[in-house]
Image (cartoon, rainbow, N blue to C red; front, side):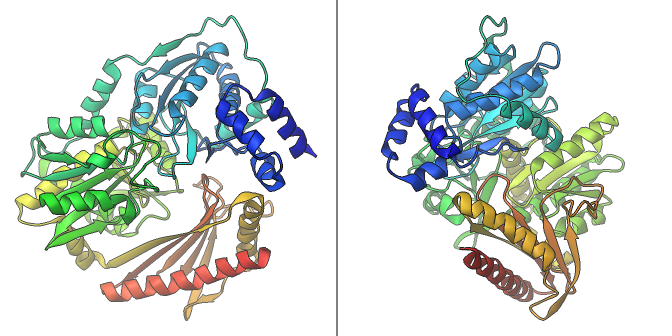
Length: 563
């Protein structure tokens, strides 16, 4: 069998990393463990690579990193003088993987620019454009647990690569063996990213401000969740006039084990627990949290005697309203302004945009599609029309200085907005309540269903096929009025030609609820998004909960039936 042959080959040749060699020996008499490591190559897509750190073709290790890098280099070497910028976060082996990628690029004739210290994902996107590189690589697994690492790939525009580019790179990768010798005598080099680039990034973030100074004093607690955000976020906030910043001590230093936060994801309450303790001790106005690669931001606000966590949809809606309101007040709103959101992001944004005369553009899930819209505006000579973009998964961007979500930018924008509300004697909770009263109570939820291993991979594929062939006609006493399928099915074109093909299904209900089901592109999960709206908060909550339970039951029962 191919699995056994691959395992034997790795036992003989994967000797450079002692951790890999030890793991291969440890699973010698465990066929299921061997199969899980070798039943497939770690999938490469528009998000690059992401997987559990360890031995095998289905794991993140120096050999999968080298192979992917050689494939990218082969793809890049079709052009003259190719170059790539590289950054990395605090995760286990991130520095090693970044160095391997840089060395491999150089050996293959691609000049590599490597940040000498860990830096956030948005700083990598910035460096690609600043240094006029052909590509970029960010070694990170974003907000995944500590056992994961990953490898995001960017094009020359600073966006994560397109589907077409990912397919072409995949073909190049598949022509390369895991243990093929690297070329020799290349003139390309590994260079440090110049010191002015991080400084220019900070200046670019500060240039997006809508306030000339902090409108009111804020007492801030901040946690980088043991990731890359500490220096960039505190540097920018202090330059903007926010001096009263307390960093959570147990989560301050980079640490890929995330000892106090097993899931370093600012979307989940557990990740903010340490920060909330400190907020109560210091009577802070605001808690800010950024994920390990500092492209997502979560917050909690002071409400009464406690603190309230706001969702990504709520923060995005507030920020969009703030950007529009301040631009109107300052006379900086461009002609034909554009805001961008994903198809699973709250429709409250569309209501806000319409109020201010802003065009709202819907794109597929993934911030690269928001970055793509900025690029299209830039090509048309209209990049100034872009004013804000966000996704429900806590990603925001108010400028065109980068082409990915930017938590450094988001932290500054959020503090300026909170200070603006405080100067009016209001909180951000007051702000979101005012939006709900004006436009309706929107409730959005996300449920994830995990399907691990080879069997889980097939279950997810079968589930999506089942839902396509047997879409529900009624849920919770309401009719399904429309099924939106964003994938090419049976050779027929997708229903939405303005968007790329994607494995996503949406069920539109007769009460304006929208239910979205899609497999994750980076994790072994199927995701269910519910978006409900009602005239009261209680009704919106009840509708959302009822629909979640109904669709969750369908997914869970299907999974049980496949085992």
